[in-house]
Every structure is written in structure tokens, then in C-alpha cells.
Image (cartoon, rainbow over all chains, first blue to last red; front, top):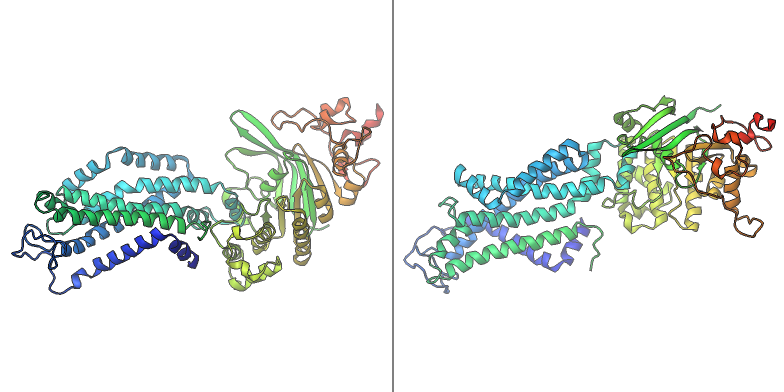
Length: 275
Length: 326
């Protein structure tokens, strides 16, 4: 584990993005603890430009943009991380089994994954959310459904490569059971690229959630960056801050998770040379 | 007579792929007694690695089939074993070490954990850490190797680690498939000395497979010579190497000793080994044999005692009593 951190810290962008994500997570976890700061609070100061009182300005109802963005991080992170965790779990289970045992199992899993991959994902997501309701659970479920095939494919490819390496025969010679070989010997070798891809799925999920909210496919009670963008675009020429700050928040968060994905990928590879 | 840990009787095994059938083993006969060191020599493609893999049930069932013959491990007939049955006997009584230790170790797992895996699977009641440390000292690896990844070790250390993993199973028979081929000469000698020492200390049997006659001669009591899927000659090392009987063994030894022929060139065996999917009828060595006769290409002779040689068994018409008649 110590070496993991050594390699992780050696990757500067990983360090910066990791720090960003941790701060964001802390903010998201503590916003409801701040007394007296209500992001829904309407005030007389509507559409105030960024100023010392309102660092990011206010929106058309006088709500503080900074507070909104900080609270919006909750939705983005919760959706992004739970969707990525679900997609990675499902993808690894199905992909590893398909790659290891092959045959009809492989055929079925891959055809199903292709079905999801050929459908334009955003349209499918929009339709499902529009039909099933705009709750966060639905959004997460839709993202899991759309994102597991890429994880499954990466896992399958890695497992297929690794299962024919000699050391798998060597542990087979020890009398290890097949599923045990898969779980303890093959999957750990495949996990680097899979976790990296899983981190990228966080970024995709945040983006997809923001896009759905931007189109109004989210509950109006929940503050999210996509919804703020949706509100801001009507006033793009009068109040640039209403669009720029939520957009920037999405951009930075997605970028951070992308870089984090790279860092995790290289840190989990024991052959990465520490610089 | 000691109890046989491994018995292979005229085993015939075919690989079938897209219409072609390759007979990797055509009547291989071999037995290893408890505690005995047996060598198996032969050139590339003679079926020796197939034999090694067969002793652990590692022959892919989809493309390979045992067509006839019999194989028994520790008195148990394993010829028709299922994958589950194999899994129960792998590691103990039979464990294996391989040619290229780097690719046979899990690259993302520390060496200590890989050794611990084998201890956990075969001796779950032993204190794990102490047993791993004991195995490391048995193969003469420093204790710090526990925390090393395979790529951080040298070739010789990796082979020691692989040996420790195999020994963790507590095998009665260690199958070593070209264990020193990937190593440089001095390391080869060290690993061989280690294998010899371990065998004496632990009383396990050894099946050492190599194309290097010197290695086999120095480490084994009995030798089998394999050619095109047949075991063609076997007996005590001193007999097989000292007074070889089969023309193939004779040629092999000449080539190994870098003997020179009349023109001052290195002795070689003329011709190439036969294609295993187009084996000639009769003795597979006949097309290259310097003493070939008409009956050689009709039928493979049964094993019998060698004439004008040591006390070995040989499958060659030149050593049959009928041969003198013509």
C-alpha cells in the first residue's frame, strides 16, 4: 500500500486532482451542517454581479451562487460515485466471468453489452428518466445501466489476456479452484485499467447527470449544477456568472476525475517506475 | 521394490485442431518410484513438455485427448480424471516448477503471499508466516524476499521463489520442466545443487525434464530418452549415458560431447525430427537412423533389453533377438 501512495504522489496531476476531489467531498459532506446558510434563501439582491458580499454573484431570485455551487457538489458527487461504483461492480462481475469461462456466457454478456453500446446513450438516458421520474435513484440506475458495458469489456479483455499467462497454470498446479483463481489471481492483475476506467465513469456520470438536469430532467427541489446552468442560460447576456460558475464547477470536477483515473491507473501498476 | 509415485504406460495423446491430428505422445512409458530422481531428455517437440503437463492434468481437454494407455499417480488411475478430480490432487502429491519463473509468478502479488497461497491450500493448519519463512530459508532466499514483487528479483531468485511455492504444497513428486533453461550457467548450477539438496532433505521424488544432457546426468538416477512421443530408451543414468543403446541416444550423446566426425565437423543427427501430425509408420527415428533396416518402417518394436550395452531397456529393432537373422 505504501508503494501505491508513493507512485500516486509521484504523479503531480494525480496529486492535484486527488486534493481537489477530497476538498469537494468534504464540502459536499458538510454543507448541511452550516447553520443559517440556506442556498434556497431568496433575497432582494437579484442578479448581483460577483462582489465581496456574493463572491460568485446571485441568480434571478437573489440566491447566492457560491452557496448553490457548494451544495450542488453533493448531487454531482453522490450521483457520480454511486453510479461509477455500481457500474464497476456489475461490469467487473460480468466481464470477468465472461472472459474467464468464455463460451455461451461470453456470447450472451457481450451481446447484451453491445445492445447498450449501440443505442445513443444520452437519448436513452433522457427517455428512461423522463418516463420513470426524475429522482436521483433513477438517474443513478440509468447511468449504471449505460456505463457497465465499457467496464465489462475492459475487464473481459484483461481477463482473457491474463488467464492464458503461465502463472495461472502455476497456481492451477497448486490445486486452486477455478473461481478462486479468477477472484484472487486473475482479477487483481486486471484491476489497474478497470479502476482507472471506473474513475472515468465518475466523470461521465457527473456529466450525464448535469446534462439531464440542464434539460430539466431533474427534481426542482434539488440544487444541482446542471439545473443552475439551465437557469443561467436564459440570462447568459445579462448575468454571465450564472452560467460560468456552474459550468466551471462541472468542468473542473470532470477534469479532476479524469486525471485521477490516470493517476490511479499508473499507481496500481507495480511496474510504474517512481520518478 | 519401492512404490511408484508416477506410472505412465504406453500413453498415447493426440492434439486435434482444425482437421489435423498431432500425436504428441505415442506410447510414452515412464515410472518414478518414491524418492527417486528421474530424468527425461529429448529435443524440442519430442513430447516431453506435454508429458510434464499431463502429469498435472494441464492438457487442454478441448483439443487434446488421451487415446490409449494409462497414467497413475500415487496408485490412483488418473487417465480419465475430470477437472474437479485433478484439482484435488494438484500440488499434493505432484507439484511442478517451470522453465521461465518470471511468467509463472503472479506479477502483481508479493512473493511471500504467493508462497503463503500454496501453504494455505495444502497445510492450512500450519502457522502461515513461520511456514513461509521456513520455505524461504529452505530455498535459500533472504527473508526480505517476502515483500518483493517477482520483477524485483533476479532470475535465480525467481526460480527459488517458484520452488518455494511448489514445496509449500508438500509434494511427493516434483516435476521440473526445464527448470534451469532460462538461467545463466552459474545460476543453473546453483539451482541444480539446490534441487538435489532439497530432494535429499525432503525425500521427494523428482522428474527432471530437460534437453540438456549434462544437467539430467548430474541430477538423476534413471534416465528416459524421448523421441517423437515415444520413450525409446531408459535405464540407469550410467548405462544410458555410458553405454547408449538406441541409435538416437548415441547420436544425441555424440552431438552433446561436440564430437567431431571424419571431416572435422561437429557431429549432428542428420535430418529433422518428424512432423507429429505425419508420423511414419514404424519407428519414428527410422528416416534418420544410421542402422535402419526394412522392418524399422513397418512396426515399432516392443521394449526389450539392450544388447552390447548396459542394463537398460530400449525400443529398437537393432536390439531385438530377431535382428541377427538377416
